[in-house]
Structure formats: C-alpha cells, structure tokens
Length: 100
Image (cartoon, rainbow, N blue to C red; front, side, top):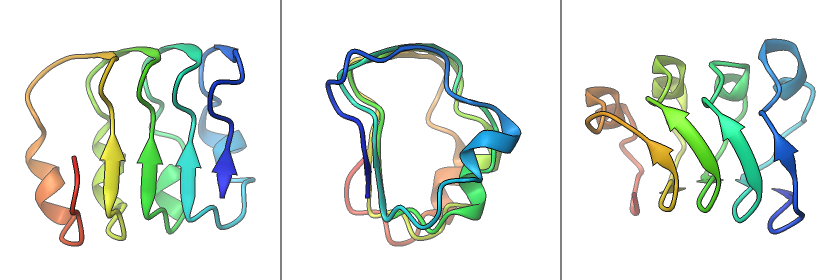
C-alpha cells in the first residue's frame, strides 16, 4: 500500500520514470493533499493497482489514456478535483470496478 493521505504534499505527480519505481502498491492513496497539475501518463499502468485514490487535490485536465490498462481496479476516487471532461470510454476496461 502506498498511502500518503493528508500529508500536505504539494507540487505535481512524478512523471514516467518515477512512478514505476514503486513496487506493488495494491492501493495508492494520495487523497487530501495539495497536488496539482494533470495526472501523468507515467508507469502507473505497470502496477497492479486495485484502489486508486486521488480525491481532494487540485488535479486538472482529463484522465490519461494510459489508465485504461489498470484492469485490476476495484475502487477509484477522484472527487474534489478539477479533472474535466467526460468519463472516458476506457473505464469499460476496468471490469472489476465496484466504485467510481
């Protein structure tokens, strides 16, 4: 589990090379921080994430297409962000999803 909830983090999420250095977090919880910018395409897709919590941050833009490969997701939380656009059609790839 990669849990850095309510840790007063600021800035942007790491890009392509940094996210892949985290090994097997079944859950990534970065909620209730001050992270801004877009959600990077990054190597999140190489991780077998089941829970992906980004709520309560200042994210903007749309969800990157590379998130379509996160096929083990059960729970995704994006509330309280400035993410824009429609719910992408690739969320249909998240066949195990129980909560969005």
